[in-house]
Image (cartoon, rainbow, N blue to C red; front, side):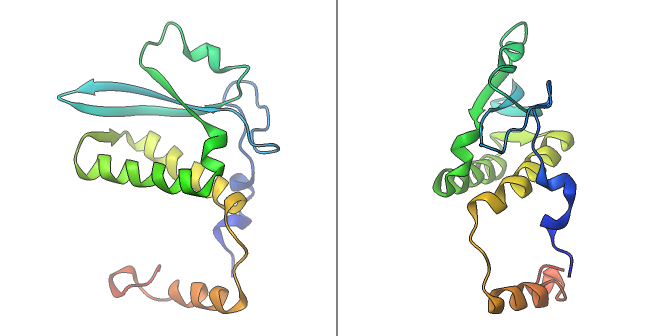
Amino acid sequence: MKTLFHNDELKVLECFNCGKDLLHPPNGHLVFKSEWKDHQQINLDIRWVCKSCDHLYRHPYKHWHWKDLTDLFIPDVLIQWILGIIVGLHTKTETFSDEAMEKIMKLLLIIFPYISKEMTKQQKKVFENLHNIPRYMGGLG
């Protein structure tokens, strides 16, 4: 079975500007271009950049803000960040453009293998079986 992590596109995280590797070792920033409208933060774009290039987002863009990428390699920080996004979406205090949401999902798929543990044989079997069951029946298919 082919898993998400066999996709070569999900094995690299390069600076949006200069192409520097941000995974070995983990470093850099996530920069978010956001605007506020009716008490809602609208995330229009997300980019991952090295710390040498993040100055490009300080001026003239006043709507860019940062998250240290290395923090997301700490499992507890990652899950709290994901839960924060879910709460923001649920309470409608935060939203993402389609492009920004795609980038968030790609980022999570890229960094997950670096913070997760190896699955046991039994867990791999359950994982495979869940892909054969439709979501509406509790599976992942």
